[in-house]
Image (cartoon, rainbow, N blue to C red):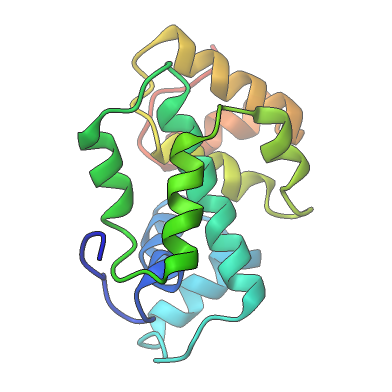
Length: 170
């Protein structure tokens, strides 16, 4: 077990989907996974097993958060624990995905290539949640990610504002 489940859906990556619903709501995400999660949360989050597509989306969003946390060249135990706290109970496969994400090098291009059309802003938002934006390396990472995802500076700054984070672009 890696941390505590936060409600609605079962633990594991499904638990991450449930916990990310609040983050998506805070970020003002509409449509796509964010809209689905917000809708589910407003209706009391049914006790259903997430679909394969939802599990894949959750794994991608978790990967985005982990990569962002590592973009300054390190990830300490406290950062690992903060990220895995969203998971709850995990299967062996889910634990493998998480550990592989922690061990893998930061690869913006691979993350962008694996991002389905329509999830670009959610991947960016989860990346923003994965870091503190207190270093040049983190700012450069977000800039590169935004450019490669096709997110313009105004949209990136709007995401930052909705998330209560400092603007990336002046």
